[in-house]
Length: 158
Image (tube, rainbow, N blue to C red; front, side):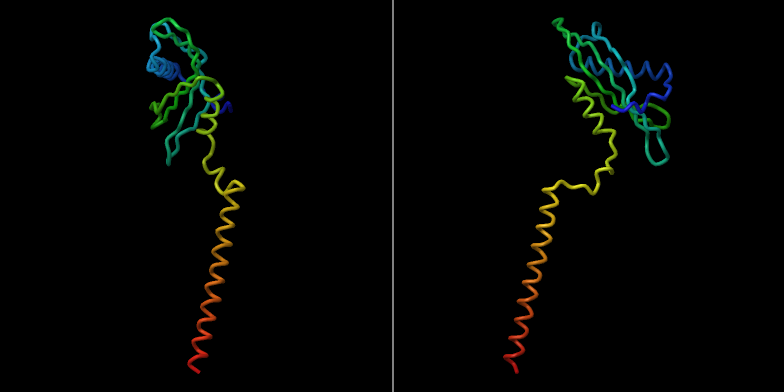
């Protein structure tokens, strides 16, 4: 996971708001709101807003969720916020069973969608080239048949 938000300083109000959203995410997953607690809340991605687009923040947390029957479970959470005109707007929250699946989701979300443009797998390239060659062969065959037809048509009239 890339520490892209390590150098950003967040206010106390932001920390409190993010903590509340994290606790709400845990409670929505049917854990006890009084006994469950958020641990290790941290920002992992921060993208400033610009004139053309809103900003984005991703926050990770671990939580100790306690069910209504008293069973303890560690959950790995992720909060996504949109930064709109300087305000944090919650976009989505997710809970994961393990840290690895959360990291994969973060990597997919934060990667540049244009970075993979133009890259095809080997099988895709094979099918593209096969199609192009087939179209070229069919075109040459059709053109040869058309030329042969015109030559036989003009010879029969002469």
